[in-house]
Length: 41
Image (tube, rainbow, N blue to C red; front, top):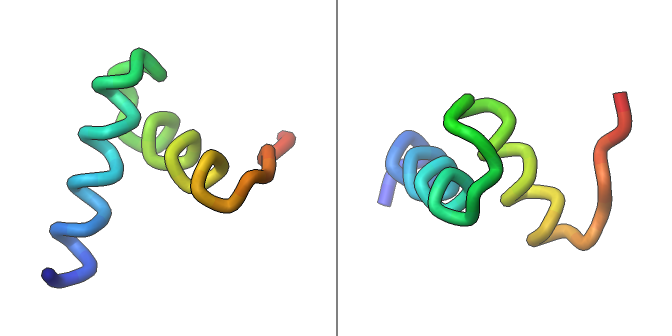
């Protein structure tokens, strides 16, 4: 699996979990969950 496919899959996971349809937001939420951290901004 290439990095692009991996990013796409993580975005899909985030959107399916209801974290919004904005790709960047969904992707960040999945990364946060996987790392058990929260990005503040």
